[in-house]
Length: 223
Ligand code: GLN
Image (cartoon, rainbow, N blue to C red; front, side, top):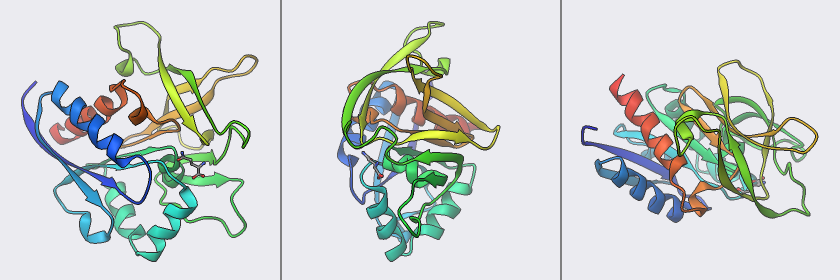
C-alpha cells in the first residue's frame, strides 16, 4: 500500500482518549501510514480543514453533551461530520452522541450531535452489569482476522449502550452481541462515513477496529 499521511482528531472531553491514541498509532504503523497526526479537539477552532477523521471516545454522554453545548461546538462538529469526505467514529458514549435518537433520556432530553439514523438505548445492559467482556460476532468480513471465517471480537462493555432500532437502510450492522433466545443485540454500525461501536476496542490489544477506521479514511480520501 502506498505510504500516505493523515490527520485524525480525538474529541478530548473525557474518556479513553490516550488509549485511542496508542491504538491508532499502532494500527497506522501496520498499515504503513506515515506521519499520522493525532490532534486534540476541545473547541470549534480545533476542527481544522486538514482533519480527515475524528474519534468521539467513551465517557458520560450527558457530561459530553453539556460540554459541547456550553462551548458552542455542536454546529461545527455537525457540519464537519455531515461532510461525507470526513470519517467519524464514536465509541460507547461517543456512539450515543452520534445517534439521531436516544431512548430513555433524562427529562428534557440530552443534547446529541447526531449523524447516525439509529435509536440508542443509553444504559441498555442495566445498572447491575456495569462492565463485562463478551465475544461480539462480527458480520462484516472486512473486520475478520482470517479470510471467510465468521469471526469474533472480545468486546469490552462499560455501562454500554446498544442500538435498539435502525431507521435508515444506509445503516449497516457490523457486529452483534449474540443472545441465547433472540436475535443478537446490535453493538456496531456504519452509515457511509460514520462508524459507531457500543464497546471499547481501545481497551484491547486487537487493532481491527482502529485499522477499519483508518481504512475508511484512506478509501474516502482516494475516491
Ligand atoms: N452509558 C454511558 C452514557 O450514558 C456511556 C458509558 C461509556 O461511555 N462507557 O453516557
